[in-house]
Amino acid sequence: MIVTAAALLWTAGIVAAPLLHSTLASELLYRSYSVVCHQFEDRSFHVAGAPFGVCIRCTAVYIGFTAALLLLLAWDRFRTVNWNTHILLAVTAVPMALDGTADLFGLWQSTAGTRIATGALFGAGLAMLLHADLSGILHSIIQRKLIPYGTKER
Image (cartoon, rainbow, N blue to C red; front, side):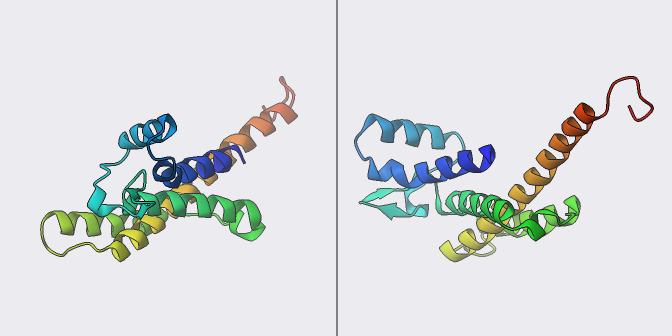
């Protein structure tokens, strides 16, 4: 829940940056997001006449990530699926990598639609992988606390 809350705040800040235009908070948000995104204005959504804190693809990654975390919290069946890491990574990362690379080398031009689709897919995949890893770590910690030291199980 902590990671989900942090993801919600991070994602909200993307839209808050232009809405808080000409304030210290806006400047801090834009600077924070500049660490993770190129922030090209022509590749960003705009609100209130100013660009989002990150580009379209990054916006989609963060929205996909946050939406998947919310889905994992809300839907028990989705949370218990045993994801194959390699397949999940290939299915979610490869389309974004291909879209970005092909655009870079002039093989085709990425559109807002391809950036949104591939970014959201990648973000959702990252959330599923993170959730699985954190769940495994927490399960291990809980199991260690329940099994007393000096027993055969330990």
